[in-house]
Length: 262
Image 1 (tube, helix red, strand yellow):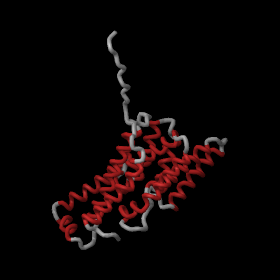
Image 2 (tube, rainbow, N blue to C red):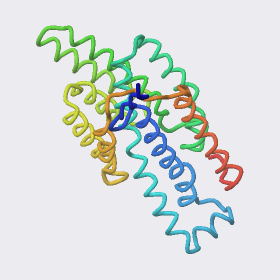
Image 3 (cartoon, rainbow, N blue to C red):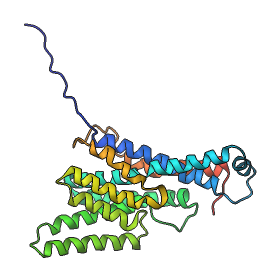
Image 4 (spheres, rainbow, N blue to C red):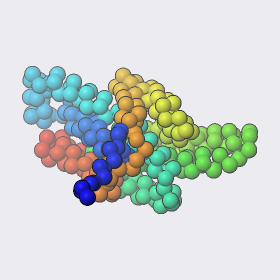
């Protein structure tokens, strides 16, 4: 009898893990631009090495590289919002999921403020604050689905409005826009094309002032999502990457480039 072996299934499209890697790469590019290049380009101190760099032929190059990296980074947050909705829909314990987000919001706050705002206090809160608040909004929307009309619509509107208010009070990084993007991804989940394009349009509007709407590019990888979780050997590596890479970039700026706090 001839030897036979079943061919492995070929998974077309991008898994959830693949989307995480895309978002992580885009986020790293964004933070290199914000934490390093932006501080160099707009530095007004008396560091000789920075002054020489910006008055040389590399000055314009660094500026355009900074703008390009920030634009690439606009695709990260919508992807993370999409993955949060997917995680909420498939988690067995949403409370444990929320506690994880809240814990990393606390862990990431100081690295975020040092790296992005170059101070111990002030500025917006880190992205985990937005995601933790958004997770509560998703829970509220799910609970509202069990209500009868018109209480269902009123309940959802109240939940989204409350989430927007919380994001403002907590100075969440993406504020009201982030809550709206999350809510839209959840409410339109039954139609992937409409869900992704609608989220892309909101991301376009959110990123218009900074990067001419580059956030809409997040729709491209999301349209290729195949609905599979994918293999992730280091589950918590995705969570730890955020605070750790911020601290690394901050130390590079502080000790290698020499730009001080404040």
